[in-house]
Length: 161
Image 1 (cartoon, rainbow, N blue to C red):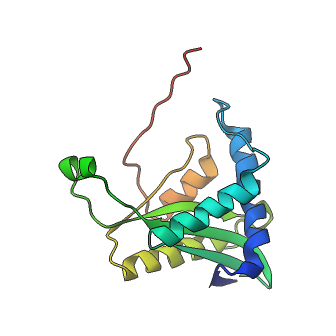
Image 2 (cartoon, helix red, strand yellow):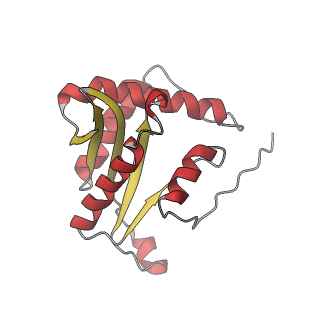
């Protein structure tokens, strides 16, 4: 398994992984808020790349041979004036996406990608990493906990109609 930075030759495979994850998220979303729009594949990829470029981010791919089996995207969080009033605002890396193809899980790609992103964030002076995971995504939560991540915030939802 090899970890490399995203190049144009891997873009289509990364877009396919984004769609694979979104299909899964739609499936497990008990509130049925998530969807897979016709413009998702191209639009989401474009926005992810833009966010990473704008905010000192990186996108890394896990390769098995020449095939992309995983991707991670991360960037440095920007703070607003309100944040400065209520928060110490350490330099913090945000893991926006971590996806491993369902056919390649349990082969170590996720851990290698996460380690690579952590190394990158350390190299640019980040002291924390934050990521979001859906409550119903039990395998992902187990993976992150086993890699030293801890729950800090809790978002609650209630359907009222």
